[in-house]
Length: 416
Ligand SMILES: NC(=O)c1ccc[n+]([C@@H]2O[C@H](COP(=O)([O-])OP(=O)(O)OC[C@H]3O[C@@H](n4cnc5c(N)ncnc54)[C@H](O)[C@@H]3O)[C@@H](O)[C@H]2O)c1
Image (cartoon, rainbow, N blue to C red; front, side):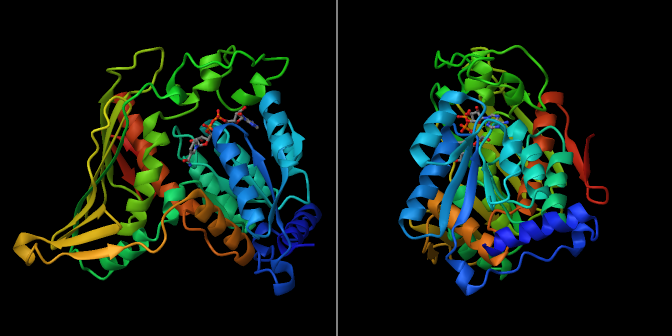
């Protein structure tokens, strides 16, 4: 039995017996050397686009000698479930609760639409599983969801990685160390964009594979889960990112990938104030979410952070961190730090190459390493909480046309 399995069984025994509170559960200690090579048994919940990417990665890592295996696959759409089970040999489940009840599953990956992330993650953590949860860590509407995940990770001493795979790039550490050492001076401003130009099928409410039949091969009620009950529409199923009930549009689809590294590199936590703007100018095809979305996030004592996402122009801005004394730009083989004209010779720049790029394989390797060592993964739940706080405030700001401010004492946000 693996140490991860042992910990969970012990956890279940203790919590069932009620003899000890969650805090008394033994911290998931590092697996012994003999247990190091026992495969970590993973179940993937949600086997659409990203779930299949997880499954491919796990199989690739296993083939490369990583101690991991696919124990189960889960989806509410039978065609996808059958395909994933056939491709991987994982045991198929329609209902994620049946997956979480399996004691021989160590970890789950969650690749469902956003509205299901937190409910499944919290149940999984409470069932003693470690979790690889796709970005955004939670659905955007309430801060109760990220708070519940942070609490469940701590209470159960579990490991959670958010699926922002670009975080496995070590350029964030290289520049982060410079920021920490004061090489940039006081932080003033940062910017990052993810702008694309195209119909982007994932966002088209006209998407339909023509085969999904609710009540026959698709459990629509289970897909909706915590979302408002509405009759089946193919577009909602195949392009959930276009609807506020399941997604925050590009704001929650794209921004976790660029805001998480900025927060990490600059050592930021909660924002002070967030404002947003944008509109639906080019793709008015039944979708609810904007196709240009701009976020301004102000952190206490600075910096101000500008984020832009788009589905109708790919005219991106470079990723930049501006300090009083120097500017870091993320370009070429890593990053470049150039002194400000007023603070030195701008021509004397410093090149900081990365030694490891970001990828899904690297991000999964980090997760699996942390399952074994019980360390915090690179894109852990605390970073996820900080990111979701800014995005929660930003989407409310966009919808209400008001600025949002954060109160660190109560960890709540309200419009001003
Ligand atoms: N990290 C990345 O680069 C990246 C890329 C794409 C998607 N994602 C994230 O992955 C998630 C899924 O996106 P996608 O494009 O794969 O969506 P998708 O619609 O292709 O797949 C989601 C799957 O989840 C299933 N599902 C829904 N509710 C379920 C439930 N309760 N139990 C089991 N299965 C359920 C659906 O039937 C569907 O097959 C999103 O949150 C998205 O943001 C991340």
